Length: 228
Image 1: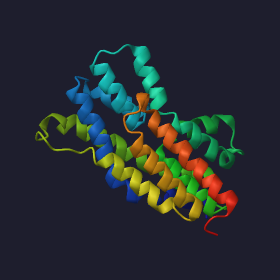
Image 2: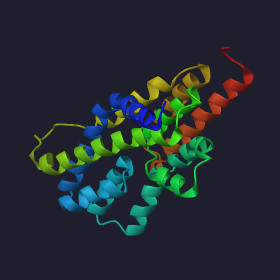
Image 3: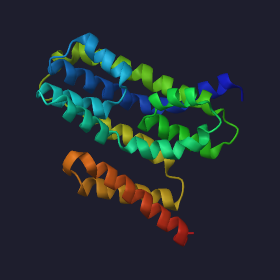
């Protein structure tokens, strides 16, 4: 396929995750409005940081007047999982220049990683850059749209209306298509179980522990041949 067709394929493959991505942006926008941030500040944060989980953590801490060092450290810890994503997807971008790899890093999210890595491992002929930017464009535009909606309507939402379900829903939408064999099924099961057990761990380290546990279990299953 041409670069244009690969870009469109990236957008198309991302569409099933967008119904959960928009509420994610909405939750960020609404939380920031309720914390006292201006609309410009909120949209600028989503446009530049482009990381829902770290934004929610930072908004909560800033609203509590926490020191900036604590805010920055928390955001780094929440985003530690991206080091695993970077290591996994780096071989597919090896032929790109350093400038393009830096641009790609800005758009590396759970969604873009999960969809792109699945496609890259299935199809060697896919144009890496075009497809990746297709997924990133779909997520970026809808996330900003959700943030703007949260800014506009965040203070008008009825009390008790919970939209937090969008976050786990988004991750489930990413997880299911990527389970293609025994090791990935084991990784999902072990990682999910550890994540639930480790809820409440200091500095959200339970997410990192769960990720490492799932990867370790998958490697063991793959090397021992269990289930094959």
